Image (cartoon, rainbow, N blue to C red; front, side):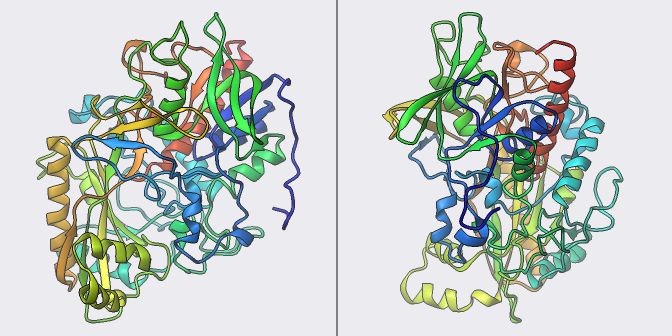
Length: 528
């Protein structure tokens, strides 16, 4: 990026009928914009957030960096209302990858056929071996740093970069895992462990989840977006898309977006919605017409339904020795034991758990959440450098009652805001209970004292526009193409039929790479 200057790129007019208007530039939209532009398609990517310059505009300050999160008003209800913001959504060019924890994991192969093989959820219309190839492409594109040998799943090539050195918090996880007789590994991360071009390796400053100020983090902002621009794509930041416009032939003709103080319309031959699991259904529902009175691409009635978060519970304990868990990325060691082991479970699905390194403000908030105030809070914060924790990413079940709908309230653009309804099912509760019991044993075996549990946290957002093999039971097909509107595509975590027990970003980017290849193949056959 040019210091203090405009990023030079191709610019289209609103009257130019571009091949693809892509709404959202995160893991799905940003990756797809790059791959489509490299294949010769004309592309305009829209993002409601700003285009930040990390080297100049990011600070080592938790409060300052809240500018990266999607904090627009939403109504959250249900039996277990979600907390939305820093833990699951971003508003910036690059999306939530600008502040994600960089954990880059492949799905367990059986999860792509979880209904047929494991007895729960819904089958994906994708083959795991094909996805394995795309995972490899993304790992190379991002320069993933990981262990020489990964203990779980089919054998795979070495990661492009060596694993990061373990911090003391990671060594706590390792001790606990070994004491309980299970495997562990260095966490595969999308941050550099060695120089890459003009980017230097991670300096272990610990502010990863508030935005990397050194560009060691291989977010969409610093990987796919620059390549997309070099290939001829245009990225429009601070551009809120409010409606996908369709004609009487059930085809999209462009998008209405608010930018520079006014509503505008961009013509397009194809529209891709990649706003993630809340803004994607919100946009589709706000794009209702006489022909689609229940929302665009919603003849199945499934737009907005089957919202899935992931469990993110944790156990924490104190240690006599200094841990200084903030040094380095927040998750430097992991075990996927309970993703791949099915015996001994009283629940469907799986979970991984990782070492933790929360920053001070987040840690203080966790203490007040457990009822510590005043002197008790001060004492707890004085013990900050002697803490360690384990935290899961756990699979929660798809349920139609967990959904995104439109509220009566309007936002600053005059658009109905999202109502997000969420309740845990019995299986979710059993998985969480199992993980907390197991992690508490592991932390104790590693030498932890005064162990306590954080029981209500969640992370990541998926579902609400699931892919499938039939129009009656899904919103898009395996190519992420809408069943109802043939030139409307959805390419983000909302297409997930199930969520798995790993962070979703690698899978979203793999799906985007596959979708780009499928679009190219369809175009060559004249089937767009």
